[in-house]
Image (cartoon, rainbow, N blue to C red; front, side, top):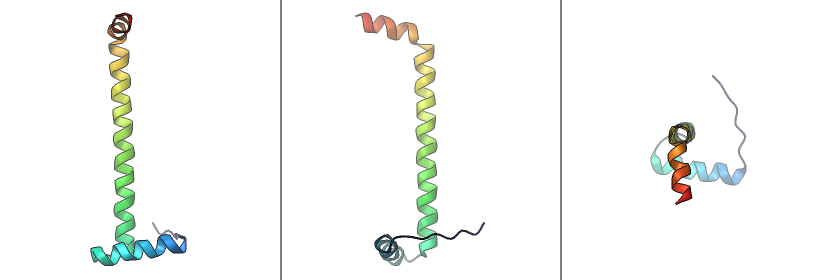
Length: 68
């Protein structure tokens, strides 16, 4: 899917520098950044869901520990 992205000049310059250092296109750098962001957000959601499951399944234990 095609997409137009308008970047502030300073961000575009920084992106160009990174792309040159990595010997890849700015597109490749942005694609990797997007994949990293999606991966991090997915992982955060998984961790939150896991914590919620633990809190629900061990609610009684948590109440008893809080009373100590």
